[in-house]
Amino acid sequence: MRIVVLVSGAGSNLQAVIDSVSSGALQVEIAAVGADRPGTGGVQRSADAGIDTFVVNFADYPNRADWNTALTQAVAFYQPDYVVSSGFMRIVGEEFLDSFPNRYLNTHPALLPSFPGAHGVRDALAYGVKVTGCTVMIADAGVDTGPILAQQAVEVLDDDTEDSLHERIKVLERRLLIETLASLAERADHATR
Ligand code: GAR
Image 1 (cartoon, rainbow, N blue to C red):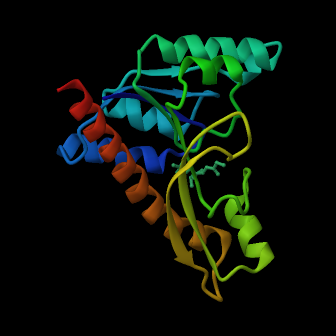
Image 2 (cartoon, protein in one colour; image 1 turned 135 degrees about the vertical axis):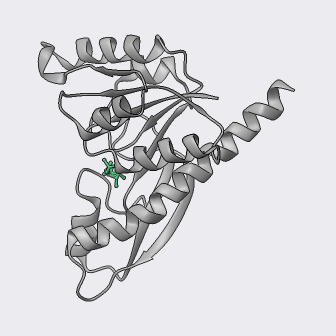
């Protein structure tokens, strides 16, 4: 199973996927890692690991539709079985979703449908929930919407900050993403036998 991973930031979840692939625990091929802006930690980590990288810089395009077309082409070049948003903080358009139907995975640091958006951890803390968590889903045209594949709960501690809570969530989020990819890869393997 070939995947392309999209990142906007540090790429610590991506690093966990890279490590699992390197150790042989996760049997997928990371065909490439792409970002929506230059200078991301995620692209740096991938380059360090010898993985192909590309940047489709949102700021370089006159409008969202043109950026979306360029992103779709850049990802399609690698002919992935799945595309994984790993902290990719942009909504993709119809052209992208139609090119990878039901094959665009996303992770989110909250128990969706609660607290979607760019600040899922901060919003959960501000609301005062006692339990939050992480979600892996098939992404659609909405903000952190789409069919949920897996979720895991995380207890909120009284002295949690956004960072401390996010770090604990990410530990489970990484595991959940890797387990989800492993089960999709296993299914793909069975289908080709
Ligand atoms: C992850 O927690 C991911 O769920 C979140 O960004 C973080 C990326 O961390 N994504 C969203 O909030 C999407 N709405 P990383 O760059 O260190 O892997």
